[in-house]
Length: 148
Image (cartoon, rainbow, N blue to C red):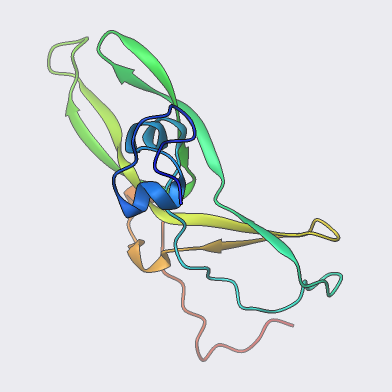
């Protein structure tokens, strides 16, 4: 168990910080979150039958406006984000569209240690609602004939 952030050396105070081995500030800057429970069933690789995997939550790299400049940040990769409109500051009365910092549908990938095949899963599919602004829709094939 570590008591200091492995990135900056600050004291770690919470269980979540200990799980990430990073302080909250560093975790936010580079897009680290505590790992949610695994969604993949404990089954061998469908391509090579190997049983060892590496589990990864992919991150995307972007910028965030901070005052008059942009700062580079990393964030976990999600399937969709909640949009939010606000009045713009460049043109009076204009609107800017932003997205919430927290996304919906946290992605996780499992990579076979032998053949490199990747399986994708969504860690929190229940948080995604069907809505055009999210570019998400519900499909239910229950009771439909199988594809041939």
